[in-house]
Image (cartoon, rainbow, N blue to C red; front, side, top):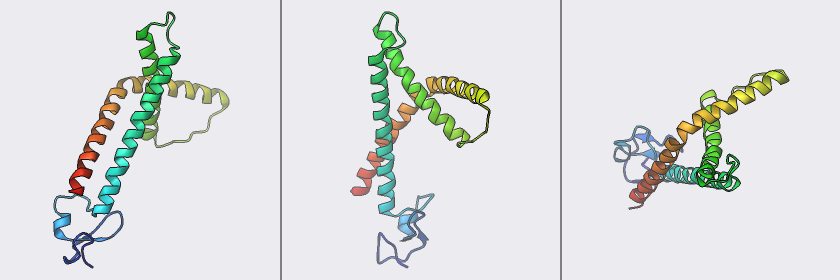
Length: 154
């Protein structure tokens, strides 16, 4: 088998995604060997998912900002906090789901309601702290994946 990226070179490894052969030059410096098309696909997916998360955060913030449900006197500060509140719920929920790996537990109706309330409170607490970190992480992923795609296409 020859290298998928350099057809004249013999393959020394296989792409972990598609199984195509890769030469020593393509494998050097990679923990998990990937062919060019699989690298491009991974960076494009990373870019798209980060962009979608950031757009979802903007939409949720805008809805909360316009709704301004946490305000009694409709102040601008409370409107911003209402927008942030929506984002914290989503962020906390996603983080809890990723940590618990969708554990399913059977409860009676009273315990199920208590579990939902506790989950909601934990989502708010975790999300309140994690939102800036998650936003910065997604901005970094956008920048990094676009930089890597530009580097590959050269």
